[in-house]
Amino acid sequence: MVRLYIDSKDVCLLNSENKNEAIMELTGKAPVFGSIADLSGFRKEVIGRELKMSTGIGKGIAVAHGEYNSRNGIKIALGVSKKGIEFDSIDHEPVHLMFLIASPKEAWTDYLNILSSIVKMVKNEKLRTPLMSHDNPQFIHSFINNHLSYERP
Image 1 (cartoon, rainbow, N blue to C red):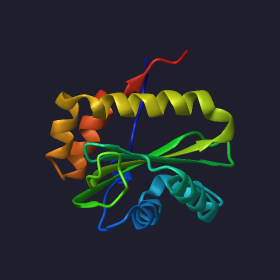
Image 2 (cartoon, rainbow, N blue to C red):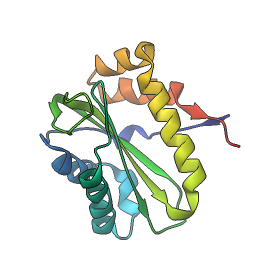
Image 3 (cartoon, one colour):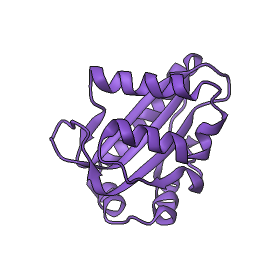
Image 4 (tube, rainbow, N blue to C red):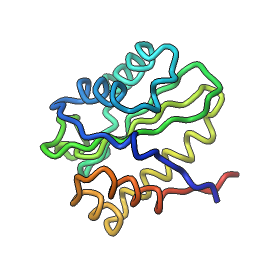
């Protein structure tokens, strides 16, 4: 079992009202993305994916993602929005929790396992409800890190 970890500094309150602004805001606020050499290219990659198909999976959750050129591992941050972000979600509801994953191209298997683990966690109503009812980054950080893990093949 691999326990995933999101640093408390990478759980950020967002003020953006649409997904492109939210992606820009979170990549600018979350320190985990500071080590991406071509941050502009990463942002374009994520926004480009969103143009093809929204990563708003419903129930107030989005899991945006993109690749970057590095061997520095997978990076994850979480944006929290009180008022909600227009995300073209499958249920047409605003997003309140936006996970953002940056993955090196060669880490495809780990990336898919992490994505699957996040989706399973937020699809579980018993886990999603506490997340959605808090806007305190410290609470959300602790809660996620206690519940997010995956099996490495």
